[in-house]
Image 1 (cartoon, helix red, strand yellow):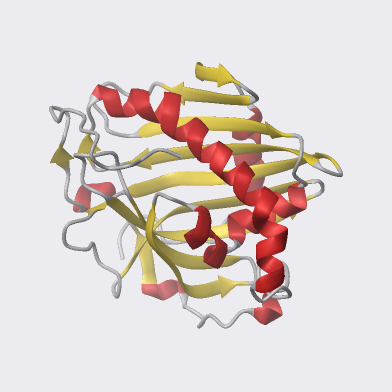
Image 2: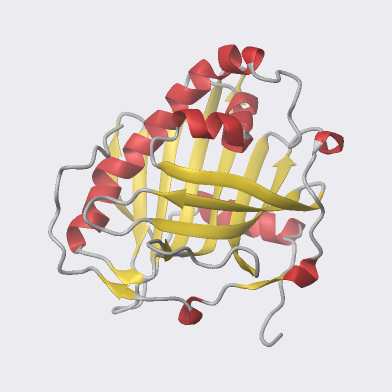
Length: 262
């Protein structure tokens, strides 16, 4: 296998992600209202890579609950209105696994999917979950979907008190396509803030839901509970964007027949 091999993030990688979540250098504010802010970062002209950061202050949710909600894949299927399909493929270590996620894009864009290596780490009062795209022979790009590439995407939850936390979401993503300008604007002004509000709403309902759905099962906290098969790193390789389909959707006009509201 040529090029860099797949590695599991170490403490330095988590510290670097945290540092970038907190940094505002090089970022431009595109939205700031009601305790939610969105930033974007200009990358090279002509490149399809997008870099975005969202931050939400939540004054009615604990960091621990937020962390559980972001991890709980069964609950995500309940509250995430954008998810088409999501499942875990296998575990790598006690705090790293491989999973599949596909999501709806605003009409008339084609929907996207990713296979990612996800890792997580509680750091004092902070919790980090982050991922990047990998390639697995059993999960090639699906017909009708565009396989996107997560260069680095993740969440940082910071505890601010018993029922008070700050959530930062940061994504560096190659959607494998030239997107229309309206999509980028819509994501910054509506979809990203809407997604943050959905997460907060989901957190408020999580305790009741979890009590009825396998309440003690939290393998992200108790790795001995996992039922996932182990995957050797040798089965994975870095997902290079150049090897995937790249489509030009830049001229597509917005349509409103799909409900992408929150």
